[in-house]
Image (cartoon, rainbow, N blue to C red):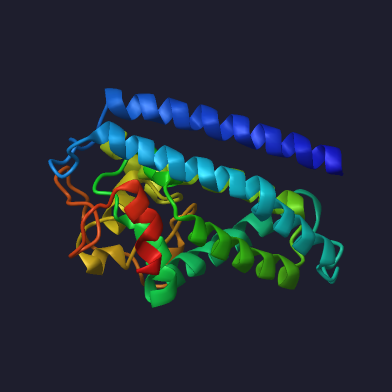
Length: 257
């Protein structure tokens, strides 16, 4: 089992890096929205996002994955026999996606969690790298919440790692600035979160920021009445209402101010 986990982690890294590189290039060839005037030095912003990603990647290796593995090991094995194999994995993915919807919503509704999550939203534009821009405090809090869910629901580590791979691929996609054909985007949006849905979540207007919480499947917001009626436009202003972007050290310190 340990060898299978290592192989899965390796393939996860390869898949995510390849997908990130593909969308990073594609969104620059076919951008859906121009770079906003608020971004004076775009490469400095990209460097900051890369540093946060590097820190969180290190945390994943030394803390997040070991914590998740421990939670899976100590979880009481109460699941019925039919909750295994391919059907069990599919059910786990659906369950984890529903849980992350509520965790995401809590990050907007609870002031303590918003302190950390707002670092992600302070980005004044969106592209594929925005999907990797999170405060390390949010990453650790998310790992603790996920560990609790793994213990209560007895989620196998393999299911968590597969979901994390799907989650990262979906997150990079719906943060991207890739211009899609309107018909294709409408068709995709019936099942998964697309840029047109998630960009509204990053709208600088707080009423829209506090909506569109779905991450992989797009069903949760209509189901729980948190879907915004705002339509994405190329000039949609991105960020946090009443606040401005911060340099890297300011982003790291922001939750503690």
